[in-house]
Length: 440
Image (cartoon, rainbow, N blue to C red; front, side):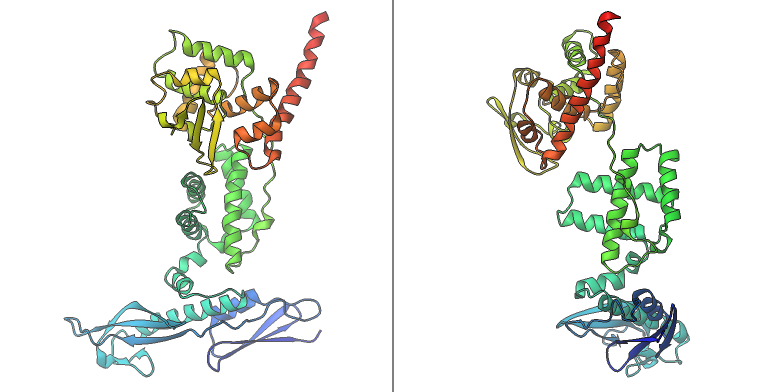
């Protein structure tokens, strides 16, 4: 097999020559810069026919930078700050290097600290590190054919951990998506919570740490230590994959790619109330025996059983959302206006003076609902979301049409609503067995 040579041209007259012989890469490189050498090794791939898969692309504009001393301002100890001036597409930025020397100790032509300074070696190492980081960022954008902006460049330069630490990258990505309104606050909180769980598993996770072995260890931790159910494990890894995908798109190389992490589609057991159980819960709400601390939970849970609202929407309802026989509100999850007609049971529940005065967290409601289920001998694991499942299944059982249910639940896809059809059909098939009880 003949060797393959790839030439990557940087600014000026500096060329980086890579020769790949068979599967063993050999670098011929001037000047020596191991950061760039390793980057090139990770980026250049060779097909069987000896053509490079990816190659360097020219940037649209030239990035220039220079090390300078701000000798117009002299501090009380006689030193002045050293900074790097960056110019790209007629935009200029000055970044301090946290170095201060006397003007006579700085060589403006060589852009280095003179040996007359006691800390010349240390200071020049800092300067060399910054210049190496700049070279690495430039080449990374070229090899990934990604458009470079001054904002992106400065972010990569001043926050190098974002290209090293998976956790730092994840936190910055989610914050940016929240600011850009790609994520709603509730989604951001949930996904940031999953990153926090990862930090509890391991305080620092680097991109270089991400392997199949690590994924297996995280999965075991979630199931054994955190006691996660399969749906929660899948939710965690969906967020993990999303972050890894964004990192890979930005040219951050990992030992495994996002699509190698498998998230199986799970059909969890759907919990909903049968008609008799719903009636029992409603009677309990109306009785004189219900404790005051149960009543606000029961009230809004039952309301959702007869309207299909999510917790995030019912908890924010105000009297002005009720317009005659209709309820109008903007759903938090979809950010879309919903208008649904209220049945008589739902309207009666709204008349309770406690309805618009009560406020509680979803977690608190779930704890109370388990106590209520135990009190009423309902052997089901109730959460607030089971009220929505109850509405959907009872709506279909009582003759409602699937297209209308899709609208009432504000589903974007009919396939999502069809889950309830399958659940009702499975329930009916199971009840057929009850016919055997007729003849014992």
